[in-house]
Amino acid sequence: MSLVFSGPEVIEMAIRTEENGEKFYTSHAEKAEVESVKSLFTYLANEEAKHIEDFSKLYDIVKETGETIFGDYEEFKAYMGTFADSKFLTNFTAEADKIKDSTDVQEVIEFAIGFEKETLLFYYGLLEYISEKGRDIVKNIIEQEKAHVEKLTSIKSVL
Image (cartoon, rainbow, N blue to C red; front, side):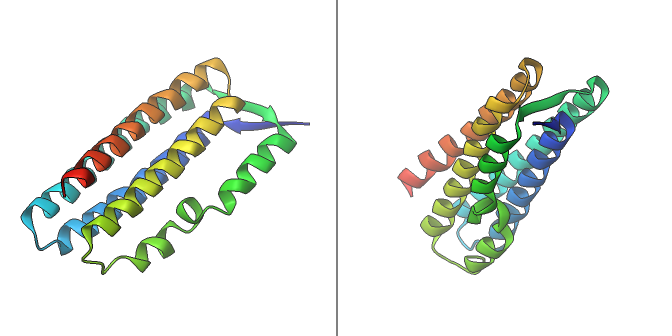
């Protein structure tokens, strides 16, 4: 049995993920007492907002073309099950709440890196279940998320 998963639905997931990231970074920017940390989180929140705009544009394009994502139902169900158990993707708010009052910048950055990596794994997995046109869209999303991981990692190393 084949599963049809629409391109717009994939983009909607990306937008929701980016919205969670923007809220997380904004919240930590507002609480930061050290200016360089405040700047870092403000920058990342702004980056997430840009990604939301980019993904919204992709959403409009995909919605117009009717792009679908195909895959073997059992494989896709198993794949999605892995992410249903992922604390970062399904319980982001609860996990983020655990560190919402943290003053340990390293801890917050570690959380952010973990979330970004989980997001990347999700998008890489989707590449196996989509048509060529859809793959290009998801690859674009992946490139943007990789840039987040690289920035967080480089900043973490200098703190």
